[in-house]
Amino acid sequence: MVAPDFVTLSEVNVKHILVVGLLAALCGCASAPPAPKPAPGGPISFSLPIWPEGTAQHSFADDRGHIVVVDAWASWCQPCQTELPKLDALAKQWAAQGVRVYAVNIDTASGVVQPFLMTFHIGLPILLDPGGGVLTQTLGLQNMPTTWVFDQAGNLVFTEQGTAALIAEKVNLMLSTPAKP
Image 1 (tube, rainbow, N blue to C red):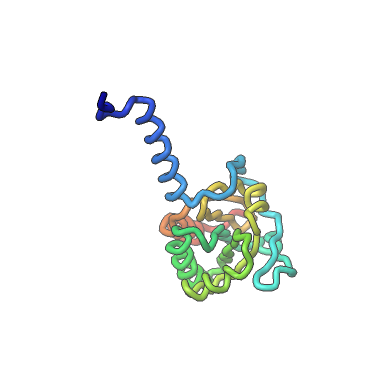
Image 2 (cartoon, rainbow, N blue to C red):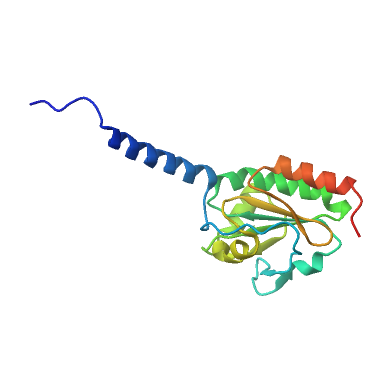
């Protein structure tokens, strides 16, 4: 007896699920497990180690009075390789207007930050969150890259996953609108 030249419906479903799951993982550079996303409105108030030493801490409370952009990235994340240089260029444009942009690396391996920064010519201040635990708990990090924008009072006003153009649009709108007291 010859085996049939068809695949059962259950085999198709399993193959479809595997392919869709693989594509979803590759597209988003998924990282941390899902966490509840914070609602806009609460002031940013956590600290992260400053690269390269990793001993000094940057407190986001010190950024009150400035628009703050926080970007999560990793050396293994393909979309980060495209978006972080764009964000770096935007930071240079916004510097005179007092916008502060921070790139938070979530790599757990040591020694990967410097080569990435040199390869992609990144000059942003780099903060460290190995494994992304702080960003996951405080800001609901789920995918890479993710960028959060905070107003001058430190309130979260916008979250975007990997599109520098949308981040630029939002920050430029904030810059053209007077800050709320």
